[in-house]
Amino acid sequence: MTTTPVQPVGDRAHGLGPTRARVLGTLQDLRAPSTAAEVAERLGIHLNTARFHLDGLVTRGLAERAPAERRRPGRPQVRYAVTRAAPPAAHRSYRLLAEILSRHLARHADDPGAEGLAAGRDYGRFLVSGPDSSEGDQPPSGPYDERDAVSTVIETLDRLGFDSRRVDDGAQPPDATVEVNTTVEVTNCPFLEVAEGHLEVVCAVHRGLMEGMLDELGARVGVARLDPLVAPSRCVARFAARPRRPAGPTVDRVPR
Picture 1 (tube, rainbow, N blue to C red):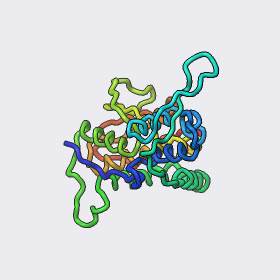
Picture 2 (cartoon, rainbow, N blue to C red):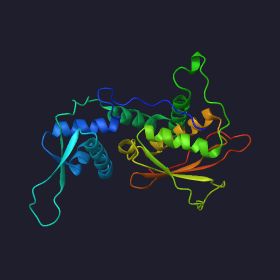
Picture 3 (cartoon, one colour):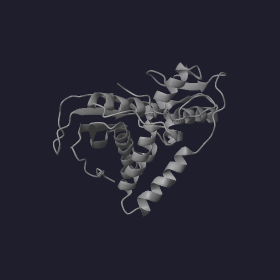
Picture 4 (cartoon, one colour):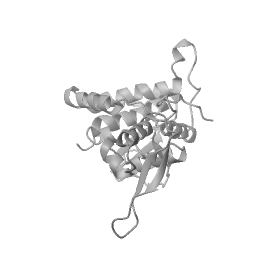
């Protein structure tokens, strides 16, 4: 049994998520056919993230690929250009706002990670319960078993722009304090650009989102730990059975 969480709204003008809308807007700003590397540099995102969203725009008919002129031996770089079907992308500086808030927490909060975790948990609960829960609608009945709960978290993260998959390789982290039952690999983080400068805050928000969803679902499983950026744009979330009386939330310390 799974639920359909609230789907966050991207750019209403053309139904794109915020990162893909920014990629489209950047491609329009550049005017000439551009490579994924040029788009990534302009936005300050990982090359693979830029390529992922450019290919998504091509699939939707909003961009097209055009091989660049070959000036040296080897395969020519692929350039991307917007098509006539592409609507004007709204220019909103979500990244700037996120950086302002993350920087403020990192500099002024007594415990930036705890503040980020609390914010993420609050929004994670909202994603499950929805904006109308205060008017009589109740969140899905629980408790959810481990597989259904983790599946719901994965589905919701994907709606937020992540790319998550269950790996379940059975391997326990060397410093594990609880037995990990489920491992999820998270890639294509939509927070990546901000996380690289404010890792403690942003990764705590990510963990909080998952914990908040599990709390609202009444799940029998919790987030045991989140290992951030074990590779570029790749994090690993580990889930374990909750104790009978869950302890207060803790924040994994991440390197600055």
